[in-house]
Image: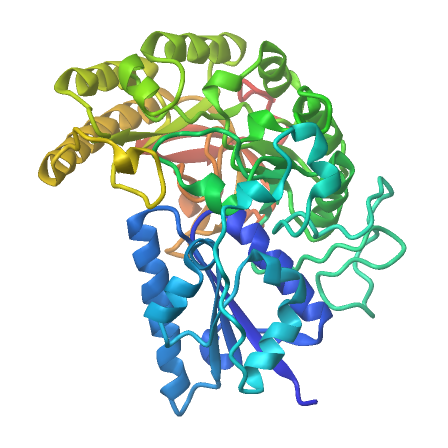
Length: 504
């Protein structure tokens, strides 16, 4: 059989990145050659996002763009396949409205993806995925879920549960697949970054009125700690220095394993993995934060004091309407607890404006909270109806033009507040994980502890401040912040051996 090539195009969140790398590992183990450019691939697999309307549109645009390659005489592309959240959520409906895609495959197809793609290249058109509420696939009781779990993207990467160290790459195995003497990790890195997302759970049991994710990602399911640690060892062997723990709700980790404190126990195990210098946790629910978890996250060497807290709003009455808990005072109290432990901890969040029934008083309550909270990063999203959600049925819808004005108003406020927060860090000593050369070729760009990957700002070490020393990606450089530009920082490297205060 001639060599078969495949390109994976990933849209959406870091959870999708994990799923794509698992698919890449499976396909490579099945004899496929991974290429970066869809034009160089026999099959372009687009891992779509189905979260909000703008993400759906982006996914469809990318699928259509990839489909044009099939008619490009220079491109190799013969087929385009849609996978991921949009494909899982809409399945047959997506296939009917997008005949340019040669197949629309759901999550249950991931374990058999190599055969599915072979069939597509042979001229077959596999049956399109039939959507269903994935919450129905697992028992209602969390304690019964582990024994009933079927195909869950990102959970099958480790084929043998073991706490044995994962040896480094065997040259006789495909790149990215661990040898049989340790756990076999069906994951293939698709980039050379010194950080990587690591999935600890999937799905969600919360019933937020605006969110459709549980319907297509399913009920909450933790990964066994041994699998998470084994995959972390494998990532370290690939040169990863920071693991970014991802899920739909990390604070629930372990509730289906019989121990709600499982995350507190897992974090020290991960920091003990040789080669891993940072462990960062994402997707924390404020209502589920525990004093013990706060203590572990702020006192365990190697665990980044970084709190990605899903506040969504600050008006108590509106939050109840959203089917959420808390409010301005509770949230400020939680942030105070974080900063009492680590004053310079990173705290970020997302908020929704324009939710049905939101009043001007609710907006002012949110503005007051953001002003007091001094968050490092805030994402501001305008509400839109999502298919199948409770909020879709609500009355008192806020007019689109009002939603747009509120988004603009809150975005302007957030930009001012986060820039002020960054200015407060000028003079601080930070540890910067170098990720890549600066765009101008002089200096390097990385992230301080309070900066999460991709969306939380960067720290630049300019060439004129580095001198003849050019740190490589993956190195951690101690530096002092000299200025801020929005949420981004510029820092000056300190002499080797400098301590937390910048002195040798």
